[in-house]
Amino acid sequence: MAEISGLLRETRAIHIWHGRVRDLLPSSDLAVLADDELGRIRRAGRVRSAHYAGVHAAVRRVLGDHYLAVPPSAVRFGRHACPRCTDPAHGRPRIEHPATTLDFNLSRSGPYWLLAVTAGAKVGVDIERRTSAVGVADVALTAYEHARIRGLEVPEQRQELFYRAWTRKEAVLKACGVGIFAELENLEASPADPGPVTMEYSESGLAGRWHVQDLALTPGLVGALAQDAESVRPVVTRQAAFRLAGDNNS
Ligand SMILES: [Zn+2]
Image (cartoon, rainbow, N blue to C red; front, side):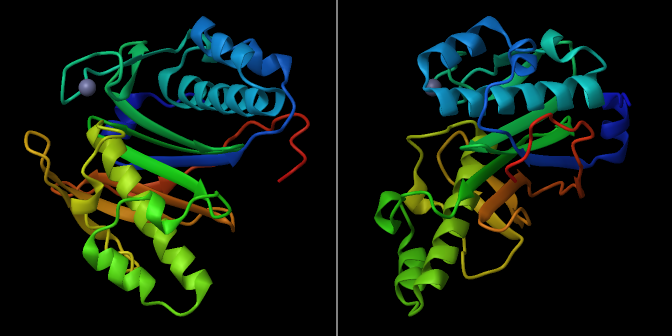
């Protein structure tokens, strides 16, 4: 069922798609990938290759089938210029072909993926597994976040707030297009607030206010979505219409 991006622009919605891909590499996924994607797969290990291929094939199918009305293999990705240095090699990912006003943002954690799609606005998403081997010290927290998280007695609560802070920050950075090397310790994520929250990114030239909400995903997964706080759009969760053969480990 093709859905043209013009319709998405009319409804001003943000569509959220998420799923889990399997641990085996299917030839049907390889068939829709581009040369640079196949190159990455050849350099990675078996399971990591399967996850990478599965996620990128799923995203191509969602964008091609539901928004762009082209075969998944015909979607060509490129990048916006970096907002800091204008280098086109590491800006936000964009759809280069076919011509579209669609904006999308993808996050992946192992086999799990999270995709936001909208038209004519910037979005950012982040997904993490709570089991990810990362400590509180690995992510720059504000003094307030540190105090709130360290002050909690129950380890599970500390972990919950930590992942909330982390995914919210990542979602904002991905919406901005700055990725790593951002000033995280000045980006307040208010993890004790169940949200949505407004986060202010203050780097000069990139300053902006972002509306950030946590996303209800499969248990054990944490996800966040960032969008422009000046013009907040409704969020609609979509289901992948295609069933993937051999998709048995949910
Ligand atoms: Zn740059």
